[in-house]
Length: 93
Image (cartoon, rainbow, N blue to C red; front, side):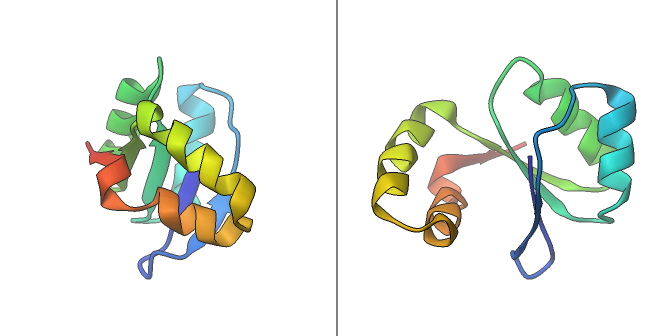
């Protein structure tokens, strides 16, 4: 899970347990933030949970992330994160 503030700056990156309680408590620490996550088994209900708390949620297209991983080897972490956040790689939920 990646959390962006209103200026699109990364304020947190975490791997979290997939429980409603944990995710709700985590999301409460970042009011009205943008959450970015990969597509997966839990992404539909997690994105709904976050949206219900007033957050913007972007779900990354896992198929397109393969290309981003190749770029990661060539760039530092910060430019790679910015590259991943490009709208063409993300589907707004």
